Every structure is written in structure tokens, then in C-alpha cells.
Length: 85
Image 1 (tube, rainbow, N blue to C red):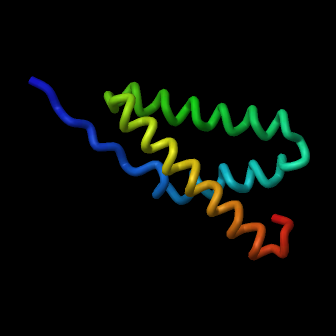
Image 2: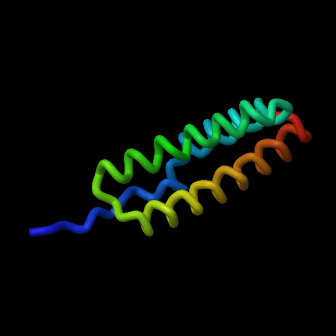
């Protein structure tokens, strides 16, 4: 017996998207720290999905969508705050 796991779309987890965007904006001048922070978020998100039984292709798709959502949120925050969030 098997089941299909349908994850809650990572890109629609507004709080997580917002926190990631804010953290990346905050670390914009610190390239290494920003990249490390982003890699941790992606790694943790992928690990949680994998532990829940989500297949690799779905994880990749979810992470791409999540990444796009974070980029859009960063742009929104920077525009709303006149370039500085």
C-alpha cells in the first residue's frame, strides 16, 4: 500500500517566504552570510519534504517556486521601503 504525499506549496507559506526575504535583504552586503543563510533555508525545507515522503522531482519544483516567491517578496519589500528594507 502506498500514498501520494501532496505538500503544502512552499511558495504559499507566506510567513516563511517573508522571513527568508527579510533575512536576505538584511544580509545583502554580506554575500557569504546571505548565501549561507539561503542554503540553510533550502536544505532544511528540502529535508522536511523528503522526510515526509515527497519525491525528488516535487521537491525540486517546490524549491524553485519557493525561490521565485522569495525573490518577488524581496522586490516588493525593497520597493515598498524605497530600496531599503
